[in-house]
Image 1 (cartoon, rainbow, N blue to C red):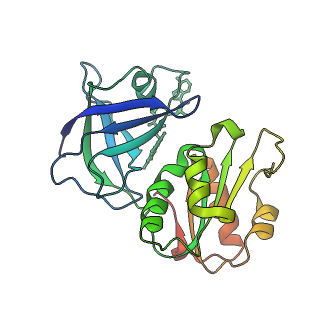
Image 2: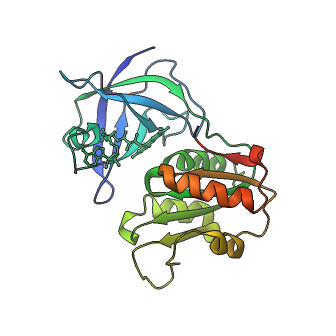
Length: 222
Ligand SMILES: Cc1cc2nc3c(=O)[nH]c(=O)nc-3n(C[C@H](O)[C@H](O)[C@H](O)COP(=O)(O)OP(=O)(O)OC[C@H]3O[C@@H](n4cnc5c(N)ncnc54)[C@H](O)[C@@H]3O)c2cc1C
C-alpha cells in the first residue's frame, strides 16, 4: 500500500459539522471523479487509523479537496480532524472506489454521501455534459445541505432537496420511499447512483430494484 504525506493548505467549516480540507496533491496522484482514498492523520497514535474519504476536487486541480463530516460523539478520526488546521499533515493512501459516472441518470444522496457526486457533477458541468442528470439530496435539515449554492448553479431545477426533520417552504419534507421515487422519477431505465449511510443505500437500492431498475444500472459503493 502506498503512503503519501501531504500538508493541509486550508481547513474551514462549511456548515455546523462538515469541514472542508484543501491538501497538497502528491506528484502523479490521480483519480476518477467519485473515487476516494483512505486518510490518516500524521501524528503519533493516529497514523494507522485509516478512514475513507472522497475527493471533491477535480483531477486537474492543483490541490486535493475533501469535505468531511465531523462526528463529535466519540473519539474517532473525524473528531481529531476537527482540530487539524493548515500546516499540519495527513497521510493519503491508494485511490479506490466504485462510484464513477456511467451515463445520465438519477443521483440519490444522503448527507455526506453527496461527496462523490460533487466531484462527478463538477466534472460533467465543466465539460458541459451535465444535461440529463438529476439529484435527489436528503438531509436532516436545510442547515445540513453541503454545497447547496454550487449544486443549484450546476443542476438548476434538476436538484431536489428532501428534509427528514424540517418543514421549510420550497423544499420537500419527507423520506425517500417508494411513493416518493415513483412521483419524482419518470424513467427507471436510466442509471441510478446511490450514496449515503449503509441503511439509506440498502433501503433505496431495494426499492429501485423492485421498481424495475436493472442491477447493472445501479451504482453503489460495494
Ligand atoms: C468509500 C467511502 C467514502 C467516504 N467519503 C466520505 C467523505 O467524502 N466525507 C465524509 O464526511 N465521509 C465519508 N465517508 C464516511 C467516513 O469514512 C466516516 O464518516 C469516517 O470513517 C468516520 O470516522 P471516525 O473515526 O470519526 O468514526 P468511526 O469510529 O469510524 O465511526 C463511524 C460511525 O459510527 C458511529 N460511532 C462509532 N463509534 C461510536 C461511539 N463510540 N459512539 C457514538 N457513535 C459511534 C459514528 O457516529 C459514525 O456514524 C466515506 C465512506 C466510504 C466507505
